[in-house]
Length: 107
Length: 258
Image (cartoon, rainbow over all chains, first blue to last red; front, side, top):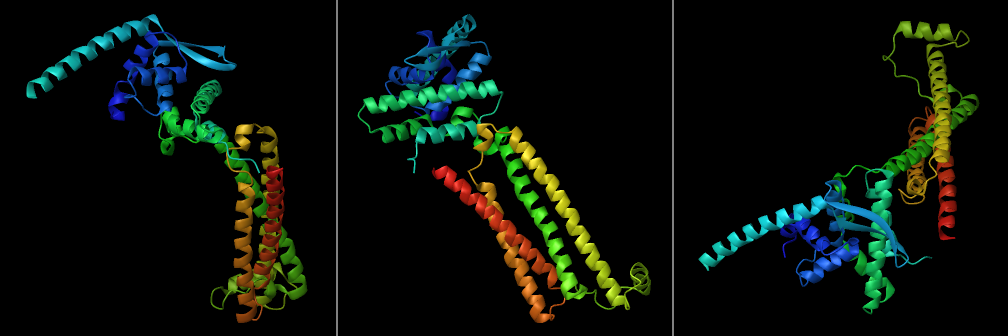
């Protein structure tokens, strides 16, 4: 998939992945790749500025935890993040439904 | 010699590029380091040799600016890089100024041995006035001609100016030593490749040696030695500076290899 399109929707994708449970950077990108069956395969480093931005906006919260002998920064959705996810998901469904109708109408 | 470690190299590059507070820098670096080690472990578990797994992990995480969120070319240089550049500049600049001071001492000796015209060429006729002559002769009553008084005056100015540059160089080197003691942190010390200041010093001092030596030889051959002393004294001092930088560079390369 076009990486620019992907980056435009990265916030929604990250919030969706984290809605299933907290995770650190590597696990988030792995879950994103698995849930998209490999379609969303962007440079892994791009998740970090997005995660930091979402945390600064109050949509995520992070804590440092030790897992398998290594310090990891675990991210989880805040209440504001859950509300934002619901709102963004609703907008996306509406947009993608409209696009599907248009494409379907011209096919 | 140590084998290259793509993960370590990537983290070094990231450290130099990251902006923000020290805490933000530490946290991002720790996150990315954990990420890369997880990716390497996954690669090894999938059957890759360790070095290939490291290279694959670095390739998958993407360029450093993917992590920092800004294009590297437009990012502000890190404080560590600025500090390291200041250290390198003050070392090279300080030694260069001290070398000019040393060349003044050599010029002084050459003027005693070879006379003022060996050190500096007199101004061409017509480029000075009677009033200039009167001023030079008043300052140097022992001189029996205007040309001699002019040459003595010019020689004195060259030597005095060189000594002033040497004193300034000592002050710059004192600043270098002060800064080096103050900025002993690893990020500053690794912000530029080891020995880069010394290598720049060798190249610059070497170039100055060649150019001034050539100018001196030209003056010796074409103008029968008139004005040859100053470029020769600069060439000797520049050569000494080049040797000093070369010795420092050799020591650093040896320490790096150890």
